[in-house]
Length: 332
Figure 1 (spheres, helix red, strand yellow):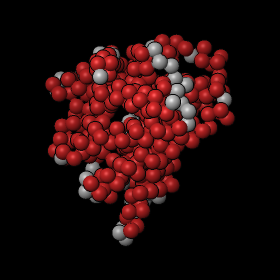
Figure 2 (cartoon, one colour):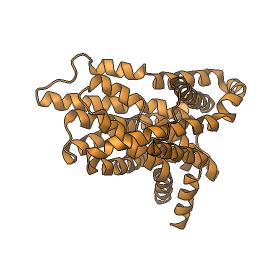
Figure 3 (tube, rainbow, N blue to C red):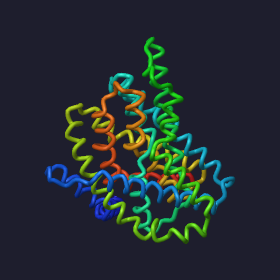
């Protein structure tokens, strides 16, 4: 227990987490700190291309054939996690179909920022992980959203109602695939894959040396946004606050079992678990606005950014590390 507490404290004192906390404090204090839209877009583009490039380069190093089972596991996690979330929200939380599906889509998708915080956590511990894990965020974005939309459509068909007539599920999936996050992640993965070691060496300054500084600025802005969403969300009820804490743990368990089953190392399984436990706030909101316009953005953004993101960054990451460590010991 003391060891876990020490790791939690170390995680909280990481500059990246402290920048996030600073942003929350600024948001609550209502200080006039705003990021210009162009700067926000640049930071997002930089981080997405950086993680995609590194993932593609690592996949090229390992070879695609050697990681097919791991890739299948990542896709499976993206399918399973929104199913749990949808039925918990609909049958326990008593939310309507639109809100249940919209929130479930966020929890089936992933958070790149939480993933990056997890890599920093492992680096601080000196724990290595498979480099190709950097490519998994792009692979796990689409399945969770697609499954959530399918569940919404299925539930509405049973009741004789229809999902937004202007957009079919196929069109929404296309919109997700062509969204900024997925295009940049997959595109940068392709660049990293085909450029190989030579490309990695050429881009080292841009995608390695200044990476954490850029991430710190991004986390500062994200903390400000999270503080603003939490105020709206508090009016929505206690259930979603509890859900925002417990759902990532449930999804983390799913991710941990899959990660260990496909043979990932301690570091790789921890990052896989962190991805499964995270919730989207970039791709999923855009998809839900299109396909489920009647869903309440204050609910799905509030629970994802206002509750789950802070929980994962502050407490979740050390919890998932110890969970994976314990399960690996049991299985050995």
